[in-house]
Amino acid sequence: MSRPGEYRADRTEGITRVEDLPKAKVIRRSRNFSHRPCPECERSCHRHRILERTLHDLGDPVSERPRDLLVTYSQHYCCKCKSYFNVDMSDLALPKSHYTHRVVAMAVRLVVEDGLPYRAASWHLWRDHRVFVPYATIQNWVEAGGKKGGATHSRSIPGRRAG
Image (cartoon, rainbow, N blue to C red; front, side):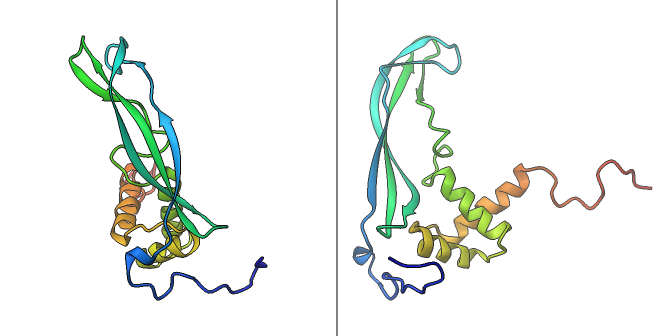
């Protein structure tokens, strides 16, 4: 058992082949429902098919392995609106994202609060949390957070008129 402040060598340092990295611990989650209300008209809709989505989450620090969430979810069809929709998974991840909200929050925190450069933040996420995120993806998350969060780079003081 390691103690706080004790140096432990990274077992993955020097590995050049992806096949030699530790395999991910897969955690299964289900969002499979036979009926769901349509987001447009609120009518109860039957399940059309069942799909799977893999989300990368913060790794397991004890076993030093990456962790993947394998989410089984249902897709439904609304006869009234003539449209397909998936079960809501916004509590786990953004639509079309490969990473959970926990990974995004940790990456943005490393850059914004801790002041790490993007490449160093990417390495930190792998070294300490066993999740690989390309540094360009982290850069996109940080820049999108500044735009969606409002005018963070404004040149004037709010509530004060120029003049």
